[in-house]
Length: 109
Image (tube, rainbow, N blue to C red; front, side):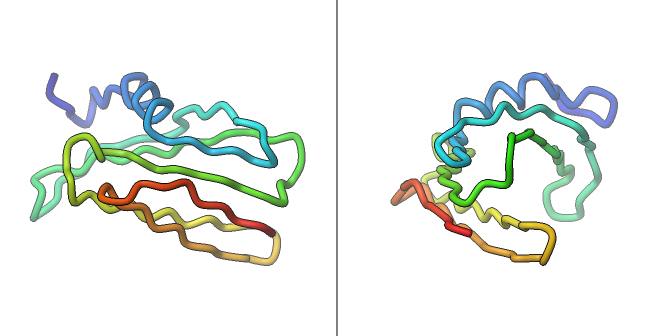
């Protein structure tokens, strides 16, 4: 299957995301859904496909745990960066994951 601007395979990505990313908010696993996606031309890669996923939680969590293993099975040097923005107040935290040492990380707010 070739990804195009009209056919981005949102449901396939959502299923892959559910298998490779683990996120818990105060011990609860939220259900994510794709709310936006697009395919855009890129001078280096040819095309970049991006997705926005959202989930609802009952209350603002005080602890998040996450493992982001996207593409770890494809590239042994894959690196994933996740930025968490807690509003209000714009408390921004960054998590770094790499395929050579995949491990769950935790944030406390």
